[in-house]
Image 1 (cartoon, rainbow, N blue to C red):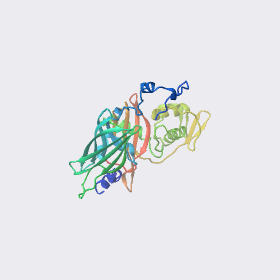
Image 2 (image 1 turned 120 degrees about the vertical axis):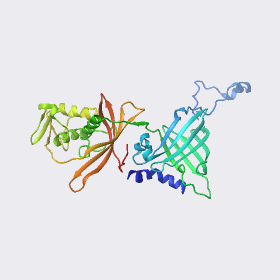
Image 3 (image 1 turned 60 degrees about the vertical axis):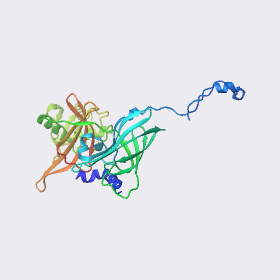
Image 4 (image 1 turned 90 degrees about the horizontal axis):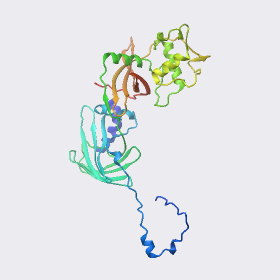
Length: 356
């Protein structure tokens, strides 16, 4: 189960914790400074070697970066499932910082620890001591404020007693969380989304990162779906010819490419699956059964207009095994004119079951 494995990536650290000079511009004249009088030297103001940095951009919440399914752990709506470990920077004034580091376990225990800290940022670093009054331990925190991230080194003082919970001990990276809210789908919207995502199976397209989609991937996706009949091509009329081969012109390819991915093909070509010749694509008519989707959860990105995240179960049914979960996708989508386009697909390494 997801909770028992993926959360272990974060919980392991928790368990270990509980048992566990700028170059000055050159003068355009070559004045011999040795000829300056003592009075003139004293009149030259001494320049500071340090520069005040504005750290106010670090105000707010930061979430723990993990090595597996990173994006899922950054989504705020999933905190109750995974639990969360984070930093809250509450105040920054003249490089003086006040904040909290917290750690909350997921269901069913929901144990919580939080410790306050404060200190000065010097050369991008802050060192502070802390004390957890609730779980009876203390230690030190070293924070490094980097580019769009905070690195934390957290240590715990030696003690004769072992606390049963607490903030993690070790070195961690914290990133901005993805602030989300759950979307309540109407029956019509849910059915429309399932129809749209029924074409997005492992047989048709492999998971991809945002910005990494290629022409070959789109051509194969459209061709395979038309060959399998997973996409209803009746709307295209005579632009699709059905027989031993499914033959369709470039306008069909580009129309479906835009519908699913928001982009046309840059270069029409044959692939290992689909043949292209003189403005037409063709693929043999295919048979077989593919997985079908159930949208387990849809979340809207509160900080990114019309960006959505879907957790989708892909199910199969066989006489021997009945209905079962084959795999689970985390799909990022952008909504345009009431329609979704797919920006990325990630396979969840250990599927989660959510009661949402």
